[in-house]
Length: 230
Image 1 (cartoon, helix red, strand yellow):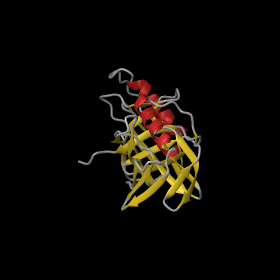
Image 2 (cartoon, one colour; image 1 turned 60 degrees about the horizontal axis):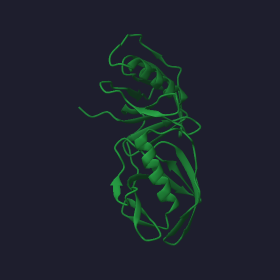
Image 3 (tube, rainbow, N blue to C red; image 1 turned 45 degrees about the vertical axis):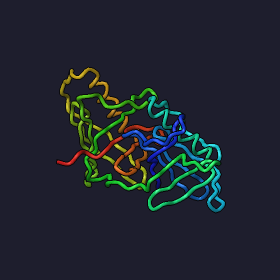
């Protein structure tokens, strides 16, 4: 599993992937698949020594916030234009037909799903997009080894069962406390969207220190990172 670390932008300059956006690729059995940072994709590929040809990609069609959309456009364009590949330690580079590096990946590692406290960085708003977490709120989830998930929706505590089966993950039904939290504006709507996104979860993946929960159709539901240590 390869996590995208850098990609070439419209100006032709390589730049790091913005913090909080997880894009990557898995190459197996003639198919490359992964996340663009917003949508899931898969495409055929063919190797001939150091040469690579990647065919047209099929993708989910979820709307992306502007920064994620920019990454998605640059990433998919660079995949389609890839002509050569090279490995260097734990890095994979894809190059275009003129030999320029357009994508740089690093081997994916990460903390375990169970036993890590996760802090949300992006939440599906239920309208086809993923929004950042409101300033002044902390939205969390922790998957216990007892099959229970607990955390905070940014205002209230929630809890409920989960079932883990390989890459499949189902969550709920969920219950929560009933505290009123008028500040900041929109915290109640964010909490409702977060709990609904958790219940829609069908799969999970971890790339480096970022956890993504997705619906069974590939739509991103929640992005998480591990909570900072003491």
